[in-house]
Amino acid sequence: MKRPVSLSSALLAAFAVETLSSTWCLKLHSWIPVFSILYFLSGLAIAGLLLRLPELRVPALAKSPWRNPAIQRSAILIGLTALAIYSWCLYWFDDMPIDITNADMLPIIKVMAERFLAGRHSHVYDPIPTIWHGVQPIYLPAMWLPYVPSIALGIDMRWTAIAGVLFAFGAFIFLYKPSGSHGPISGSPGPVSRSHGPISGSQGSIPGSHASFFLGVLAFLLFWWIVADNTPGIVSVSEEGVVIGYYVFLVLALASGKPWLTGIAISLCMLSRYALVGWIPAYMLWLVLEKRTRQLSIISLTGILCFVLLFLIPVGGATVTRLAHLPGNYVSFAARVWKDSPDVFSTAPGLAWFFGRNGTTILHCLLIFFTFTLPMIFTIAATRKQTASRKQTATNEQPAPSRPKFANIPLAALKLSLVVFYCFIDVPYLYLFYTSSLVSLIILTLAIRRPAAGPAA
Image 1 (tube, helix red, strand yellow):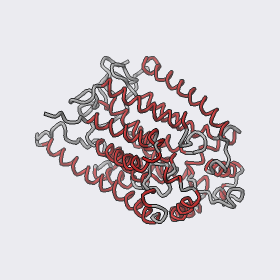
Image 2: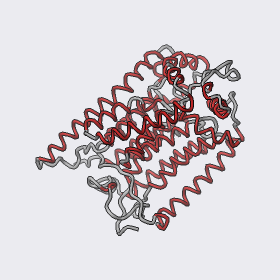
Image 3: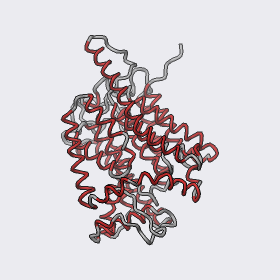
Image 4: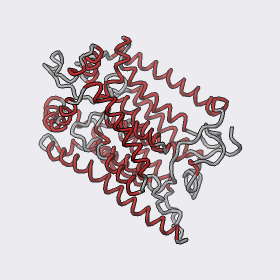
């Protein structure tokens, strides 16, 4: 009898396909359309498989965390990672200075930050005459405000984005737990081990040592592609490191179960890039269906406060109306990119290449439609299944262990939202796709780690 594919095997396989399809396989240029489809399907698979996992939670720290050998090892590894990133950044910064001939994102953000520092808050979003004969700044406040300190101090503003990348990989190192080692958590059973515990080493899955090793290899390949190879330009020309840091923070906030932390993370993500726009209504609906009114109130209040602090106070209310009309310009912008830089569409794992230069309007309509409908439908369907599963448990009709547990609906819907948004985005710049990849990495790390045995440290 053929042995069924285990949950951990399926998750790792999907993450491997997603990682390789957006990194090293892109060197095979003629196969990029195939890898685009694989990237899309593997992301959907990860979102679906998350529903079968026990509830994922950030592990609780021990009482004296810095005396824990595992935390000490993690701190050393994070330090070595920072040193490696620093060395590579010095090379890439020197090789590719900030200039609009290389990329215009950082020069635009620099002007916005300089206007803010000069006290011209109401003029931050005015056209910039010195860049492309008057380019209109489009970056949301949580995207450009983090760059203000580095510009004020006169240091290279790219270190701000690098801090986001280091935070993402640092979170992975802290959470990563090779089989047989004592991770940086207390040994007492905690939230991470609820609902039958993590997936590795159970129910015929990949042994924990193999699963953690395989995940570590994939993390290294992703790290090396972003930092050392620098093909996507995240290190040298992109602002995306900030967004990566925000979305990893959101995953950790959701897994922590702290609504105020989740509210802050949602605000930072939404006020930096629109990728979260379809997930927020679905998440709010899930809170309502689950009757978590207290969490909904805290998250909503936190979001309002962050909107006031990060948006209304720095740039004023008139800017809100101005930025609200920007998405309508994306179709014309995509047409210009098709004319000036068509290679953008053939070198990234997005689906825009299949629609061609004449299909940008259709693609944009599909982007809007799927962004808002799929997370909502997914959330409603999963919540109904979860309710049915609970009723089975209440009547002592225990569901089969292989059936979905529906304990990670917000995280699964988040992954689905990111996959849909970036795969159907009008202009698929390569650096955009690694936010979703790092989100997958952190989720898989939480899923595969195993609880430590023994007393609390």
